[in-house]
Image 1 (cartoon, rainbow, N blue to C red):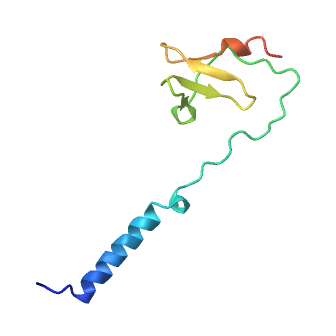
Image 2: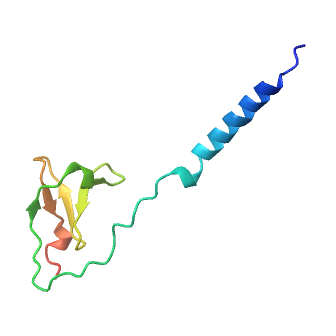
Image 3: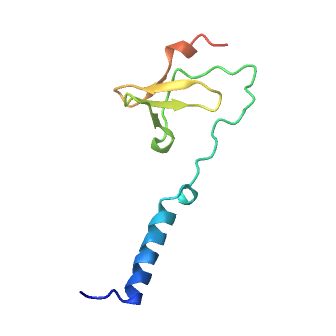
Length: 93
């Protein structure tokens, strides 16, 4: 039987420490709250079709791409690559 040397125990301890700290919630970057209150202008009329940068697009549980603008209007990506206003928001005042 081979005895385990002291420097091997240090290695195992260090490895366990690194794994536990890398998997902790503190090391994961927290996403900032994007839903901050924005005052909507009284004469605001949402566009029916927009183009959105890829970094602002989100995906729902069914895999559909959508974008929520800063006033709370939702746009869905269609097959032509453009985002169109959700039918539920077209009559919203």
